[in-house]
Length: 131
Image (cartoon, rainbow, N blue to C red):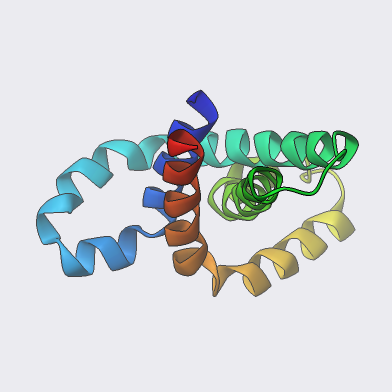
């Protein structure tokens, strides 16, 4: 449940440019979350990576629930990496210039998927609460 709520918050942050364009009054609420965007992103990235590992290790039967769980974790990792890249770069990649360049290149490739991934994460987070 907590993971689903964090996924929804991360999805809202990732999709915030599109949400604000359609609902300008949502800007006030999103602005309250923005200072925590990096930490929410780092949490989502690690939570997503851990969830992917758990999904693969717990594969006993292929079901819709398992697919949703895996999907949520993959999208959590992608959105978390995009949102938390500033902190990830600062604390993990700062001393290794090659890793920093590769991380920046990956972030630029993923950036065009930020808004769609945000909406997908919102939907998957709601689905994981419902199911």
